[in-house]
Length: 100
Ligand SMILES: C[C@H](O)[C@H](O)[C@H]1CNC2=NC(N)=NC(=O)C2=N1
Image 1 (cartoon, rainbow, N blue to C red):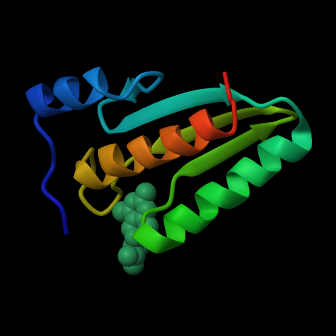
Image 2 (cartoon, rainbow, N blue to C red; image 1 turned 90 degrees about the vertical axis):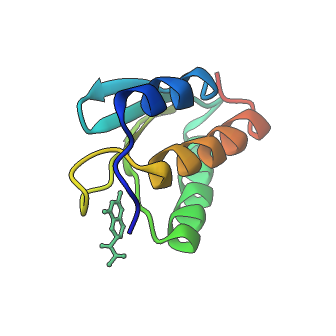
Image 3 (tube, rainbow, N blue to C red; image 1 turned 90 degrees about the horizontal axis):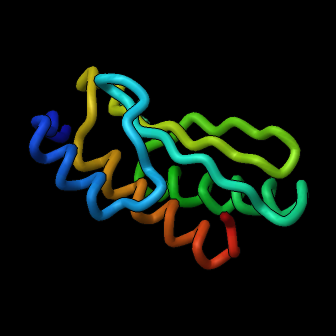
């Protein structure tokens, strides 16, 4: 259970989450390109581990070496700290793997 973030909290969080953007009211997204398809898949696999660890699961879209991560807290119908926390962890994986 996590509280819905208000607009100020969402703006503040996005300010410290480079690459993440609002897709709609309830969703934040980040696009990333990896050097190869295999590296994109390995990145998805690593994010899957994070998702299981946090019991919070992003939608992940794979197009060759391009990835899209989409976060929302379905149980609350919007954005919570679970989304912004996991977004930061996904960004750390993307940085380490040299995504652009
Ligand atoms: C039972 C389980 O904790 C819930 O279904 C979790 C699992 N993963 C989830 N992931 C996301 N993105 N939003 C949720 O509300 C959510 N709920």
